[in-house]
Image (cartoon, rainbow, N blue to C red):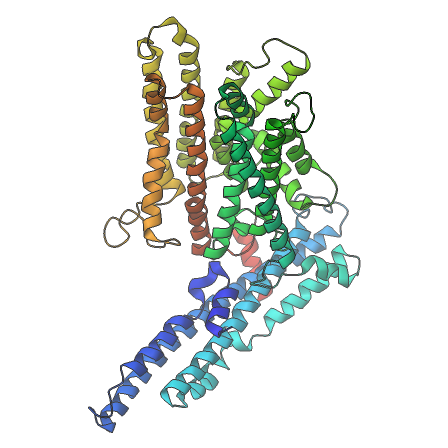
Length: 610
């Protein structure tokens, strides 16, 4: 692999702007060679003057690059020095019986591992830039038939403070020793296993790709069987209706899982550090192939359940109604299985996050919590379908007459309100916890409060429609429409201005977008248009129902799948916006705060460190 590709693969994305710009400097060299005056049209003196001029420009640019790299390295070393001092002081305090289990020291093992990771990243920054300067100087000498590149490298880079610094390696050794002594009782092998950093640019194991591909193939085959089977029974409308009512929720959740696997794949390829954003340990995280494997397993369970349901007579089963329950039981058992198989660490992480969402007002809210709660707002219909499926089995097992009644009840209204309530509670908790952006949290709270009003209004409309000849004779419909319009406009504006961070540029090439973009410009404009259209899908739903083009169930099915698609595209730009915030702050590792440091503490630390 050429160094340019290696350089791009191994750099820390959040620090990209602080690395030496190898690609631009290489392009400068190639351009200078291509634009060199021909010996036929210019004298040797003119050609010599051309290269002298370029030499001045090129090495002036190299000096700028070296200064930026050195300044950033010095800043990070100073931060590392202070963090190490704080960790050492906390470890000393930990030895006392009075503070051993205190809140300021219980995160020490995690703080040490994250600090060690930041040191390894800084070491990688040091070696990559040193190699980049050496490579670009050699390329300069090779293409311009000169030896100035080698002289410049020896005179400036080899003696640069960042290249000669030995303190970083000393810090790495000190952290290894501290972790071994304090957390593994002198077992260095165990300590290094905890501190280990996976190789940067590490590829997905072929076995993982094989498993994902195999299960995906099975899912595709079973999906094809379902489609063919439905084609041959399409004239049995009662059977098709029952299948749709029983399987809409599982199909929607399976689709959402597949789309999230695609989200992860694109984030990894575009350099969006979702691992850091979701506060996941870099040493133990799932690849896109792992998510694809999980999605394929869930999809395979759903589609095979449908195959058994449709062809239950061929399998010599008396009734098909036991098969849909597999779509509830098997994924649930996969998630809560306590044994150390099937990515147990990731499953426990998801369960803890769900627990924090359920107890939103009582737990500090971090990005993964409100991101997952936002996903739930797009899966409201799916949640209702799972409730109706459970209600169906409750009635079926008790032999009740209304077993196939899928009409709404009070619990469905409550379930439809829950996702918005979770987000509303999270916003209030963030308002309580943060001393900044309080206005933003209140505005976000209002958005979800309006959503709850919309759900209540739609419930009232459904409960009172039978009293009127037409939907629009119902006075409540106008309240529902007005609140839906307000909610849609409010939510759309919030998507663009807050979640996406767009409309930062009002002229030029990136008009209505922002200066830094990860994806192609056309992608943002298309997502913006799609977001508006799907946000207003409720109006299309009303139109189709009012003129009897489709049933209410079919219209709700269309709008629910469109909402899942909208959230899929929303994820791309929302994570990109969060990633760019991390880039702006040069944050490449998780922040593990041990205690609040006052200005007096900082001044005392500076004196002790100097």
